[in-house]
Length: 582
Image 1: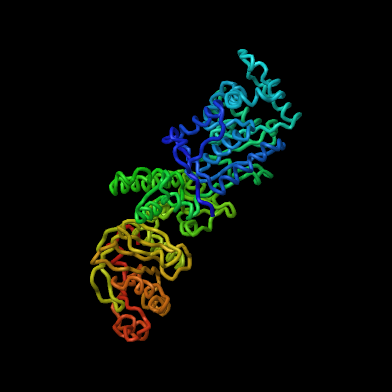
Image 2: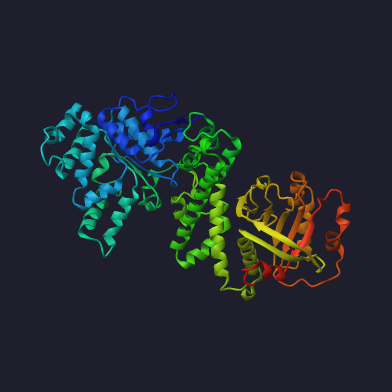
């Protein structure tokens, strides 16, 4: 895999020539530099990676060929680097001396269209960015003759008509790149809005007939549309146009590591442990990595923690806004499908708002969603936990007559309650006698797919498995250095903790390769507690068979088994825990 090449951003564009790994725009004339600087004013991150270069090369080939109907729509979560692909495509076209117009602020184009100046705005941008190429091209000189003579009103819709005809007649290649396509989608949607102004209606008609789809009068131009946040166009493409979608993915792990570890990178972080902490929050999202990492060596751990808190807070806010935007029925469905989403089993259409906001991403070869980082999953889990607990208050567990449904609800509510908790709750032994209280402390929840991902961190964590059939329902891992902490393995059910099925399940935890056994090998100094959650009262009872063996020291006589104490959190414990709505 090729290492990334780091290029200039708005903050260092004055230093384009000083560092070897930085990209210098080759032979850009003043018109092209003007467009380049306008793009840099928006702090667009331009990182040269195989996927980015492939997308840019595809666009260059389309422009160069003059092929009718060429066009793609870039899609990806907020901050992944879509705008950088657009800027890279523009720069490479300019270096190849291919006429291309680049609009980084499509909202301004929409405002011009409301005044009836949609074509004029685009032509003015094309003229400003390509005056040298126009002057060197005989067909284009004829189209822009009035502009070359500096006549007033030289750029009109009739000039656009002539330009289209000339492009088709001479098979000229001209590219159009516009970012933030959601503004065009929003403008078109106003056609059906009863309160639309005359200007909004004018803009809606203009974009609906000229730029919203590809196969129209402007199919003469090669087009790259870039869907930014809330860009519904990328999953509501017209029938037959789905092939135009191009997914911009987060960085690969090796690329992200190079970005953080290369001394010339704008996101260089010298401390490997700090890098790991940053990745926990940002994942492989380019913009987040750069924003969090920039300047850290000089500012230290306090600055890092504050930045990471802001990142996590913003993720929680975005997730809460998405959830609040859904109809109540869809919110309920989202809560029921929470684990399926985190396990990568749901289409992006089910949670497009999370994709737009940069909480989730999808791969080019699959339309299922995945969290962009561990803390993105934490933000999602904490938001869903608040909703699950608030919705639970109107539906007590005891009102659910179907045992299977009640079991699912118990598990969801317990995990939601434990997502952030600091409670001391009473427990019982398997025989029903009262035991020592159990301290439950959790800062946030994370997901895991493999048991080796369950590790102590700076704060206590509730780990939830992504596999829907994982042996246990969750694992509470104490914070690093917590001398009183214990690993708590959670198993929730409406069946009696003394039932043969649950006893057999716990014994499998203790066998070699089982959850408790693996954790005992990896963290021998931490005691292990299997917490069996039960939504009814557990009465005292004399045990026999495997249940008796599990509850006494007899289990220790089997040397192949890991040791772990078994506690029961019955109805009284859940009442102490609170918010379960029994």
